[in-house]
Length: 231
Ligand SMILES: *Cc1c(COP(=O)(O)O)cnc(C)c1O
Picture (cartoon, rainbow, N blue to C red):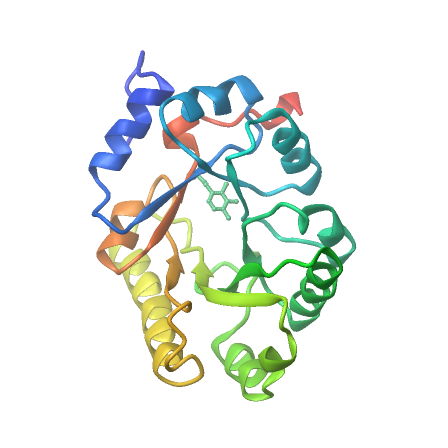
């Protein structure tokens, strides 16, 4: 998959939306890109944006229209939670009980309930964050969620291995899906809000959709390659 030369952000968005079935939401991952680029996406109707750095998301939130939905998708340090909880709509990258508890405490202070997704480690690389299956089951089994009234766990998130091996990526997404289905029938039985499966990025979102994704997080296919050198 690639972006044709001369394609605008609006055209990129349109091309991606055409590939998404009804019910799959597009999170436009705008990290490293300037507000002008986000505004082009906004003007093309995009309202859901994903960022992975607290400071950057706050700055963009202040510069962008108020009806943007901000999703935190990157690893979040507990000491930075306070800065995003007042406005963030969802946190996709909850990877520890301590982080969940911190979000809960800060959300209580703001009088908000923050939607969270629990990040599962599904890739072969050891560098990616996330719970293992066993850690996730163990945490839920303690019943801790019942104590955390200011977070609402709405689903799971995962990142597949960075590989061209389609079968491997599909298997990893299917694993996340099966964990999601398991929890829907056990810990979250009857909880209709537990309905989100955040998986799929620029290079693998069609595979993620095939495996049952409800939210794809797409960056470079919309905004072009990121230039980390300019930060
Ligand atoms: C950067 C990022 C994405 C988007 O990556 P692209 O390959 O540019 O689509 C998605 N999810 C997470 C967690 C990211 O950090």
